[in-house]
Length: 188
Picture 1 (cartoon, rainbow, N blue to C red):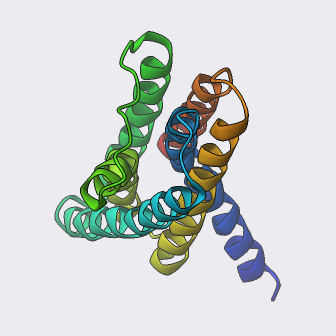
Picture 2 (picture 1 turned 180 degrees about the horizontal axis):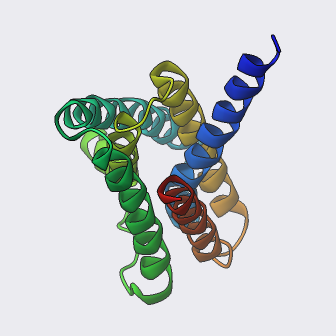
């Protein structure tokens, strides 16, 4: 029976990684659009690193707020967290199908890079909030989110440099489905 905690840790790692991939899909899909504008490799590096940093701090802020809320409302918090993940997933899918808004032009200034990183990390704040409502390994979550945010942002920007926009909207739908599924799992 000594192997059970290891299985639980791997299960938590896989769950956090899948959610991190779902969050990173936003950076990936927007990165494809940005990359198609023909950005330099140095800009890809800057955007990816700043996005990764935001994917660490935004969920961390959300986790702290979620832990505070858990101490106030108890078990109701689990249902709130699952509901938030469902709403985020639905929102991502809705935007993918019905939003006519194009990705904003990436400015190479530090403020433009920060704005891009903030816009693709807002979902991470909400997911972090829902994680704060559960008993989640915070260090693992923020590190995985940061690494995946960085890698998926870079992958999207680099892929955007090479191919057309056909993949961008599908990756956001996939990310939305993953968040929605985990929200349902938390509610059941």
